Length: 102
Image (cartoon, rainbow, N blue to C red):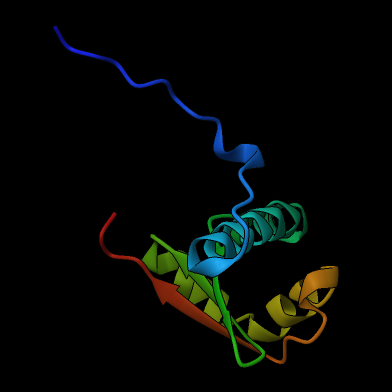
């Protein structure tokens, strides 16, 4: 007979330290930032999402080449929008990437 494992809600999961705990904390922060970013972005750039923050550079990702092209032309505007989000006040550069796997 097959035994079923119970599903665990990971929304309140808080491991004590370690890399897994850091990844969960980072994922929660990025999700919150993407919610705030979606409110600020113009409709033509809505498919952009924060993917990574590294060395004061915000890396945004999209699955659409046209959106990426449009975003590349508006890097200054994107930087201004990102710095309106309290967690991203120290961002000084923006990069746009395309995820071709989707």
